[in-house]
Image (cartoon, rainbow over all chains, first blue to last red; front, side, top):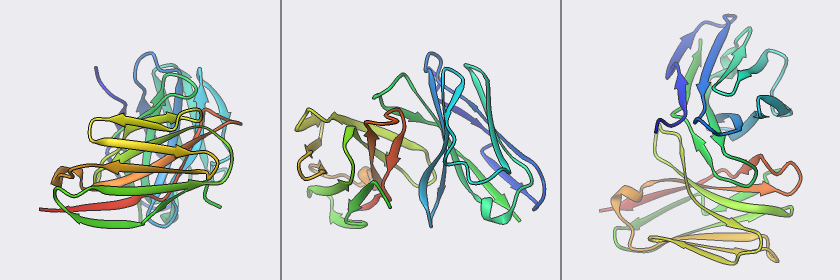
Length: 113
Length: 112
């Protein structure tokens, strides 16, 4: 079975541009999580969905960040406008249910110049 | 403040030795999980221990949980070069229990 799929794997963009990261969770999983990882702040949870509904977006840094999950097999994380401090590796993860392990995608390395 | 904190931050041992990493947390939990991350890759789930369990084994991995001390340890026995990675503990909180709070990780280096 395919794991969590993320695209693109690498993204380099200029400050002010819109960035869209994509995620396809494992089929049958009903929870999806977006994380950001940096050396300074470690791994931070940005937002998570349960059955396509956003449950907790308290980790979203500011209004420039938005996430959607239009159906059970697809989610996007959008940054508009992007800033150099958004440079990080963004991970998507999915899980079967409460209290179960999370399966991580390979991540998208975002560089904003 | 960080919910889960790993100790030590970095650990370097010889191949064949055992590696022990510790995790402390602050609030009550539903479960505690350990993950491994190889450089440039996503995290991989290793083992989950629930709050009513005290010890769990999986291959060369042994995890303990002491809820009275709010701490857990991960023991990797007979380490191999391939075990070189960062190891993270993650706590599943009772409130908002679906989300995990990750620590900063322990960077483990196994020297051949």
